[in-house]
Image (cartoon, rainbow, N blue to C red; front, side, top):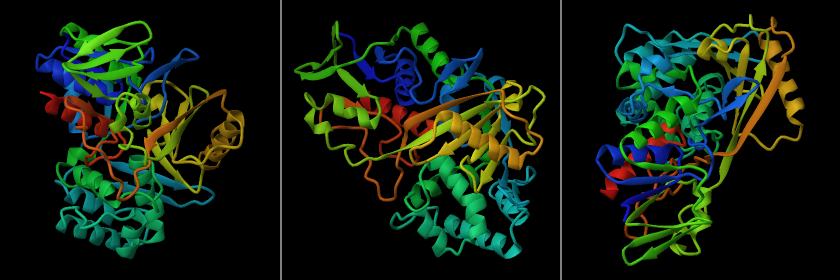
Length: 428
């Protein structure tokens, strides 16, 4: 009997499979879609490889970087590592914010120096931000009780300008949740890991290839080379407990396994409650936020001042120059996080985004083409005091893995990888 089944080929499932394979376990991974990667995958469009969403990694994502190293991915070959430099522009004004970490100082002094020398805010606002960070450090970035990030920032007298230029963009990028709902504790966990340990942890890592080539394809190759099985376009329709483990049923075939990791999305657990009813309460209280990425192709000589730039007072929040990042000259990606459903067409949305970019970067002409990609359930709503499930379940030898399980991180690649590795560790 094959030993372990992993249902779901997203980041958590891939991480669990790689970890178990490294330990010599017999693993079969099932993915319903034709391609692996889940919400972090590449796709083809007009002769280019795009991502279903423009993702970034951080230097603090140690488990993700270790996973890539395990499967033979050399970081320097596929990732652009940029020391922390956050430039944020305000639409319809000449106000720019710039925070640049000092590369010559150790953590956390490199960040404190960056806050002290930040451009676009007053000295009193900068000192207030430094006091906030110092206070959080004294408390080990741990709150007695979780609260909204908006409330935490108000309690620590963060100015509207600093919130608008720094804390809110970081919250949307990391948690994909508005300030009034976002978990302050989860946000502090990300700040702790990124800003206070090693200065390289604050680095921004941008992939010079698509996410499938960066993560899922190398992992799949590693799995197959080490005698694990990867089945794509294979949807598991039913999981039934037996005396010896579980029966997994597809449309055409039945499999038997001793242990199972469910690494599908939290909203997909309901697909299995008919035979596993105790799963029904794990995530029924979850809600979700979308992320939309708008790709705009300009002339090949178009270059932005930075590879990544924030914009406020606008629909789009983060702008990426894919020419500088991935050699896709003139291609700009704009990310819209935690947004309400759009009423306009994709063409009208792309036109609005292009208009906003024109206001910030007057040298831009009309884009040649656009591509709009929306992940409707890109992340769970990372609200404060959210009860997240453990990796273990009420069923012996059945585990769940995903960025939504109990842990320090929000719905990020690192959160998913950590959960997958934890599930793999528990299963053996």
